[in-house]
Image 1 (tube, rainbow, N blue to C red):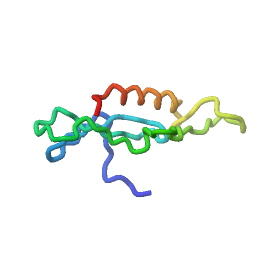
Image 2 (tube, rainbow, N blue to C red; image 1 turned 30 degrees about the vertical axis):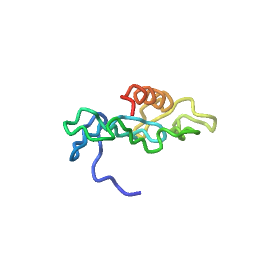
Image 3 (tube, rainbow, N blue to C red; image 1 turned 60 degrees about the vertical axis):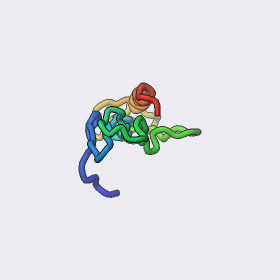
Amino acid sequence: PADPDREIVPGELLDLPGRRLRAIWTPGHTPGHVCLHLEEEHPAQLPGHGRLFSGDHLLPEITPHIGLYEDPDDNGGPPARAYSSVGEVTDPLGDYLASLERVARLAPA
C-alpha cells in the first residue's frame, strides 16, 4: 500500500475552492478511517452541500469487516480483549457503533 501524503485529523476542516469538507472519525475495519462531510456553511453555497463521502464505512446491504487486534495473552481461544498496535485496550465494535451515531447526527443530504 502507498503511504499517505499527509494524515487527515478527525474534525479537521479541508477548505477547497467553493467547498468545505470536515473529517469525521469513523473507525471500523481500520482505526483511523474518516469520512468527509461536505459542509453547508461555505460562503459559495454550491449545490451538493450536506453530502458524505464515506468510502466503505456505510454499505447498503452489508456491514464492513470490523477489525480486531490479537490479545497478547491469548492461548488460541477467541480474544478476550482487543488491542491496538501499541498494546492499548480498544473497543473496535463500540467505536464503529459510536461512529454510526456521529454520522446519523450530520445534516441530511
